[in-house]
Length: 350
Image (cartoon, rainbow, N blue to C red):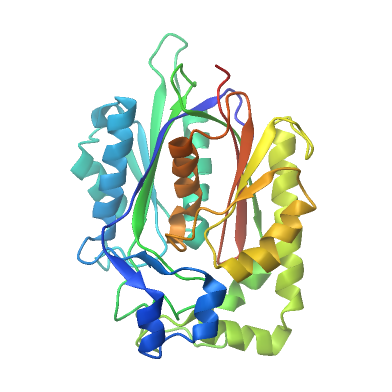
């Protein structure tokens, strides 16, 4: 997706709880092998405790609205993405977030694309802003994107429910503005997405369809479904698809942004918040063959934030003052399905 006119990122925020869950505790109780803990590379990840996921999204959204000086009732659309249970069985967390913020004029929309949901919501809200009617003299159109996840016991084991990933709790938010305005912290130049539906079986395995959540197992067990997939297909099918997808989203995102892999404006690559071994073996080598830019791993202290990796990456870029004015960065996310996304953002020239 290439915006027809610049979409401004007015602010980006990450809210993390004070509580922590420790890898050493998971090893001590036998939930996680010591070798697996070392491969993950996280000493601890944020634990939200009693804070419900939509409330974490509200916290992040308020950070963003306060930083931008935008009132909630000025929002035109609010897209909320998540990976795991939001607190009620049949309910719209997006509407709850809009109500808590006072975004009475916004259209609340839920976006479900598992771990890639935040990036998908940025693309969808940007497209909505681009097609919304707006006279040249009228005010800019404003879209808020939020994500939030809490990987709580007993239904989810954040340390041992998956291979190569530890799951942290938190909320993220990004405020999008069309057209961009002076003072926007970043410009969204493009969003590229690649899907490989043939891999959906990795999170289904050979399990039967069930009438309700966790009727088959007491806990979410992505290891079980992945083992079933690998017994049938082996690991090479996924490895080949992963490299093909990363290459495809990089090429499309750069092309849509009017850049090349060796463009001197491209300074950083923000990695998804996966385990250290997964990044070292499956991401960093592929990206090194795709672009001349420095990889940034912001996930050591957070783990994987469910649907929030891409937005958390944007927030961390803003917090660190990256990239430099006139320079650009790639921001990645990926998730079950499988789907991969790459955002190209540029810091306005000073």
